[in-house]
Image 1 (spheres, rainbow, N blue to C red):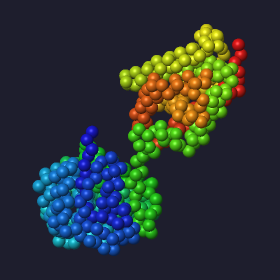
Image 2 (image 1 turned 45 degrees about the vertical axis):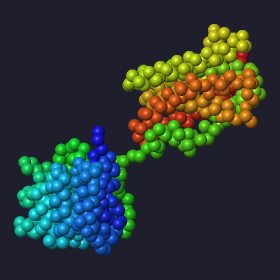
Image 3 (image 1 turned 180 degrees about the horizontal axis):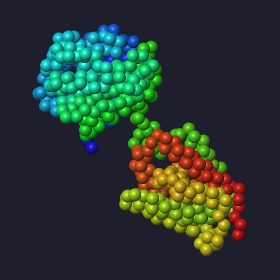
Image 4 (image 1 turned 90 degrees about the vertical axis):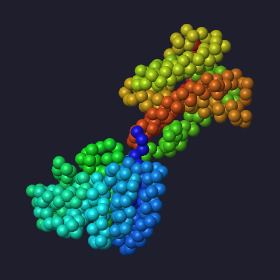
Length: 511
């Protein structure tokens, strides 16, 4: 689906909790693309607004035109427009660029009571921009100011019906939809305006369209961290509408987003802190194609991985000092091990949901068949035929490792099975590469050298690439918590691999 483009025309909040800074966080959290046209700079923090520096209207026009003429816009969201001249620029831009969908947050008053929009600008907003607005999102003080300026009855509401009536009156000023936010007027359980703080139970937002009224109720949350809730709500609505939701569903989902943002917020500053904009955004700790590198760099993996890939068995094999009977026993056990690993790859093919993935798993089985030939040919040098090898009993290390992998395949999902097999797949390649490139550690041409050559050969490198690409492709669909679960599986499988080398050192073959 094409990336949805949201143009935010609003003021900047130097404290980051509201304005353009909050808007961009919300839009990023909704996986949309944010663009900005700055109407004003503010000097403010969580305690209040100290000063406002307006952007010249002509420069504001240039910002809007630059974005619309190049990137294009799906939805425009406006916040603090600062002046009557800026509002005229925005209304003109809506017409010239054929803006079909807009969410207008009529930012007039800050939470601390600072008037951000002069009275002449309020009049201009009503007469020029509201008739072009798709969704208007005033809070109750802003709604009252709009109605008073338009010389419409604006008595303070006392219940839900009064809030609905107020929204209806504002809708008559021009916008297609009005979301009247009731956060400034919490209600009692009986849905009337609370007189005491102890009576505050419910917050009601009223959404009014041409033929419908939707009342959205939520729990009253006693929190100091509500700075920027209006900006954030309007931007969330803009993203949801851009993504194809109906206005009603867009508002409902955005309201839940804000509610969760308040609940999960952390106090920042000495006054009204911001909400948590990223409560439902989970960033994977690796970039695309970097999952396996992340695993190998994982704090819990590094120790076991070093013990496995730099094991004494490996060093003795590289310099030719490993007793033949130990290597012989290892090769027999590895043959029995690979049979079970072939079963695991076949199970992987069965658990795959796409033909391409099935094919790659089947190809891994073919590679294992070629790997087994190496074991057979080596064992023949010592008078052992296939029948002799297959009559051998599995070592406990062989059984423990292979049954662990198969158990993961049976009890968990496809990706877990791949991770359980991964230390074997990439570990042998990493070991052989290091030994092949380190003349100090390796006596090339010794009787075990063919083992090293086989795991730096192109066929095995292709198998590593197939298996790694398959895992990397699916890793981007993981959750953060699942990544850590898989890291534990990788650590356990790596320890099992080390146990396989331990077996090769400590046990001789019995014939």
